[in-house]
Figure 1 (cartoon, one colour):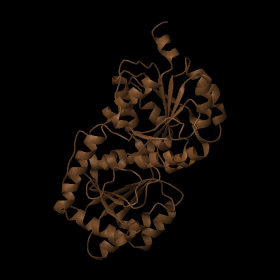
Figure 2 (cartoon, rainbow, N blue to C red):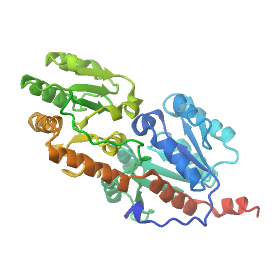
Figure 3 (cartoon, helix red, strand yellow):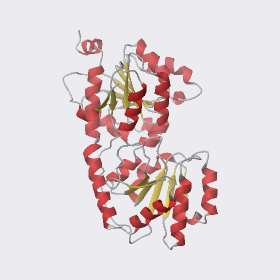
Figure 4 (cartoon, helix red, strand yellow):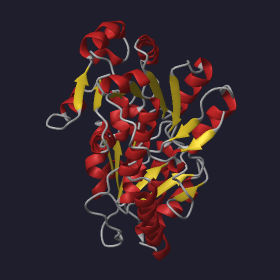
Length: 375
């Protein structure tokens, strides 16, 4: 199987596609936030009829007043998902020609439904869990597989049948922020944010220790941890143990990063992201300094070009980069400017929409085109 970079594909607007349904659960909305609304609107501008199904009521309501039809189905994950067949049959008549599933949740139900309706299921792998599931499951005849970054695509390439369709790489994207800034935090206490699921292996102990060590040297930071999870109490005990509780806040609303990112100076990823998210790209676009462990999956973490990087679990290296960022070191500020330019060039929502529109048109069954043309 071949990994194909979607940026190299041509867009053929001559092939119409009537209906595309995006499916994204609450976890994906927490990680990619604004992207789904921006992408839906851009696809609409590209001539694609888009609707979206989610188990996030707030996200579904956010499409009101737009050309995108937002559908809310609570048991998209877990108990009650067995009702999905009847829901899909009633809600989508006629059914979509292409279903774009973000992740692998409800994949069995959506696979059966698309096969029954002669539609294509596009599966967008955005995490290591998705990769592991697809390695076990494989692909059905009506399915196409997309990876959210090059490394995920490479892993899939090694494990799936060479007879299957090429693995495409479609990276996350965003609409360029109205305001971008690259400003030194030297004149105030630097604001640091982290976002993700608070688990035992999320790496926050490294960030806590780095902040504590810098405080002993007289350097102060204000840190916001945005997320929730089973290890929240454990993390808070670690913060108190290092006597930095006055410098940390835990915000248990995973989607808040989308609104608060612009007010931060530094975003830190102390551990490899098994689940990709839009937060680092938004931070880069805004001119916020990104510091990440050197073992990241995503190919938009480029050392000394888009992010400062440190050896995994190295508190000393992380503290060093935090101190340089806080001091507004010229090379660090130049890196932030380069990162902002990089996101503008390679992660524009309009480019992603055009590439997806071309893919959807290629995947549309001929029967759907005949139906649209009244034949």
